[in-house]
Amino acid sequence: MHIGILTIIFSLPGCGSLKEKRQRMGGMHERFGRNPAVAVCESGERNRHDASEWSFVVVAASRREVESQCSQIEDKIQCTVEGRMIKVTREFL
Image 1 (tube, one colour):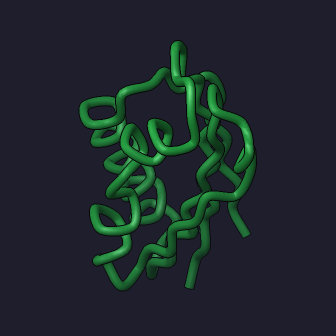
Image 2 (cartoon, rainbow, N blue to C red):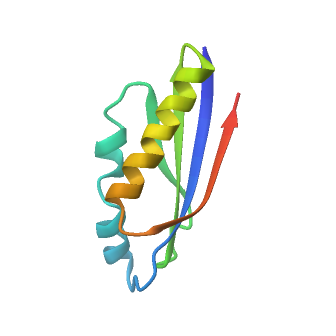
């Protein structure tokens, strides 16, 4: 079993409130948490309006599968989130 942790830090230019931040980042749990091999959480920058940090824990039978799932998450986020990814890190356990 292989485990990967994908952490993404977002910049949310022009975001003026936590409510607007939730609207921009909304649905992360629903989009990615449905997959039983993925756990999702907002892991940092919770009180800032203009930034957000999210972590995704991916479990699979091989490292290749973990890497593939992480790439799919990144691709989907780029198309759906109203913000800019400023830092992406991957850690494998």
